[in-house]
Length: 250
Ligand SMILES: Cc1cc2nc3c(=O)[nH]c(=O)nc-3n(C[C@H](O)[C@H](O)[C@H](O)COP(=O)(O)OP(=O)(O)OC[C@H]3O[C@@H](n4cnc5c(N)ncnc54)[C@H](O)[C@@H]3O)c2cc1C
Image 1 (spheres, helix red, strand yellow):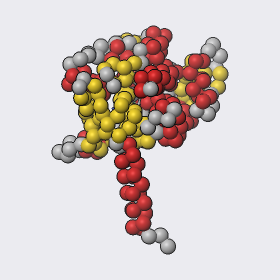
Image 2 (cartoon, protein in one colour; image 1 turned 120 degrees about the horizontal axis):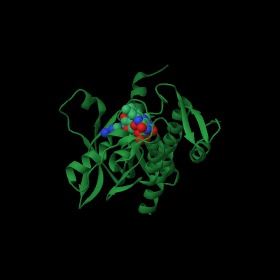
Image 3 (spheres, protein in one colour; image 1 turned 45 degrees about the vertical axis):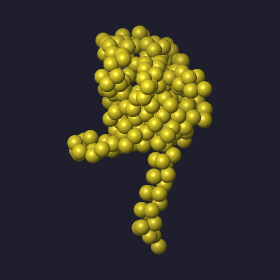
Image 4 (spheres, helix red, strand yellow; image 1 turned 180 degrees about the horizontal axis):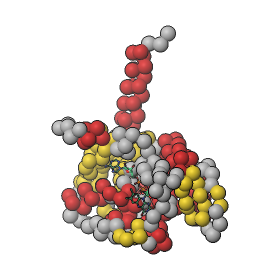
């Protein structure tokens, strides 16, 4: 016999247990694309209390479609260490290029992140909290509230570090820039894969006290070239920002 009410009770009890355990966390990551998922896995494995918010139903960001909807993903040699670590398979295509399947890559990154961090999908981060010149947390609401333009107040989450992994939008840096006036976004530039890939790794950083940036958001903040359908830089940028956050929080 299945008791429908017991099913409802199990869902709501466990959901709110998860929600409450995440409202004061070490690291809050916004965006469940490749850079955010890698950062969440690494920091969670290091023992930090990590919460990741994704506004869409499914995580993975821009991985699923590969390049122009051909669902194969190219990475360079340096990034294969992350694929190995996350148990994701790939083929050597010669000349230093390696190819993973976009579906396996998305699934593998999501699986690893969900084992090491608390993930809330369908949750939009609409604002930031700043106290004494430092980012102290996020303001969140259901993505459906934003879509339907409902007049409903959000809730707040506190964290010692916030990572903007929202891709091309650099959504959190955009809000912080406008509301604090302490830094500006240079805006993403033309395509130059070599410079773009290197830049998103090297410039992954703390842009405002308590606010870190990774992935394509780095290009938007620092005015770096875009790089087209090569994803190694995204994975390595997530790893790089995790190392910086770990060092600063310790
Ligand atoms: C127009 C276009 C151009 C592209 N150009 C390039 C390119 O030049 N180089 C390249 O490598 N790839 C490009 N891509 C592919 C792809 O976007 C990226 O490579 C890669 O997915 C970026 O990874 P990321 O981790 O930075 O963010 P993404 O994969 O973009 O993931 C960001 C995630 O953040 C979520 N998010 C955004 N705002 C919020 C919010 N407020 N609250 C909660 N969640 C939020 C989004 O829903 C998304 O899932 C392009 C994609 C598009 C659509």
